[in-house]
Amino acid sequence: MGEAHGFPGMLGSLDCMRWEWKNCPDPWKGQFTRGDYGVSMVMLQAVASQYTWIWLSFFGVAGSNNDLSVLNQSPLFTEVLEGRAPPVQFTINQRQYNMGYYLVDGIYPEWAAFVKNIPLAQSEKQEGARKDVERAFAILQARFAILRYAANY
Image (cartoon, rainbow, N blue to C red):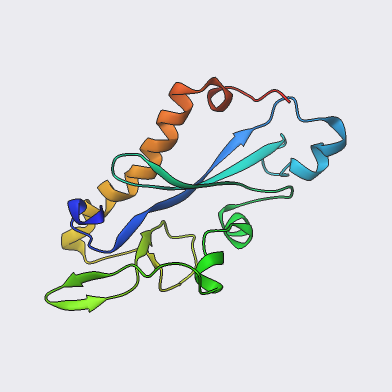
């Protein structure tokens, strides 16, 4: 699917979204409140394709979550690390490659599976591809009130 954007081997765009939990039960508020926001929050991690299909979603667990702490708890790479994930194979200039990658923003670590910056000539294409996950979040918020407004318990 990434080939449509000019990125063969791309598995999708990865990002996180914060979601206010308005009616978080009082005993849990301390676990789900970040000091910089002052309200209870849940993090949604997603990998989305150009068609805004969400291929992976993971709601972060309790704690002061940010994109990196959610990534460290996410099942995204569990199967890869355990050797159970099927290889992603693609060809560029008649060379065979066996690993796919995700487009991410600058906060993510320098892992082989993450592409943050590419040459300037392709930066507009990359920005368009990175918008896939942002568009998926916007569609979720527009279609489902549970994500548009503060959530009830």
